[in-house]
Image (cartoon, rainbow, N blue to C red; front, side, top):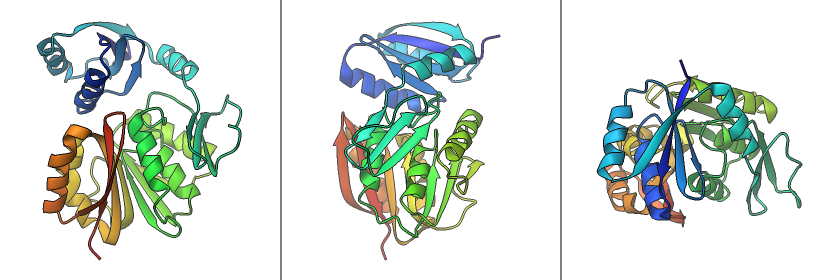
Amino acid sequence: MPDYLQLNIAVTDKQEREILVALLSEFDAIGFEETHNCLQVVLRAGDPGLGDIEILLNDRKLTWSSVPIKEENWNARWESGFEPVRIRDFCSIRAAFHSPLQPPTEHEIVITPRMSFGTGHHATTWLMVDAMERVAMHGKTVFDFGTGTGVLAILAAKMGASAVTAIDNDNWSIENSIDNFKLNNCDEILVFNKESISEFGRFDLILANINRHVILAQLPAMQQHLAPGGVLLASGLLKADSTVVLRAALEAGLDCVEETCREDWICLRLQHPK
């Protein structure tokens, strides 16, 4: 039996691709890859949400096909297609088999680029890293909600956070993040297989690069787990999500102090009242 199922969706319109990524992120998609005229989506074989995904694609009148793939085959292709990422002079993200970027950045993150989200290629990861540059991190406690490859947690540790806790509900992401923590000498980061922040304490900074559905559902809990004056950086959101998420944030008692945008995606900096 194959480990994964790859959906090949014929779509050339950039905005339609962004919408599809946002919609499919609310299922258990593990990875996305874009080619010239196709969006490739990887799911676990037997994913219970596959039927709903088929309905979604057919309702949007999209042409698509599916291909069963083995884990080792996907990993090899994913790694071979990974390119280094640079966020100005602040941070670079590369694989171990790449040479360090020149000129060097203030922070360098080296990862094993498997299927987990957060390699830095996706606009939302870029936005989160960009926003983190403007957060006073030294000595702060940080919670990474949906850590994926662990890139954001690693950056927080490198920026001087006193303690970093990360969670994900995907075993593959947990294993990959632990490997990457070790690779970056960040073994002090604590990572748990959890779906919610409810079991944890209060944090100075919460990083939530997830999706609209989860962020809306978890906003009240995240507000309760922010220290007074604490900051929540939220992405995985499209421009069209801004109004509804900002309304929910206000209802949860959070103020929006910054909104940034890249390729139809946004990142919100929300703050807990002091």
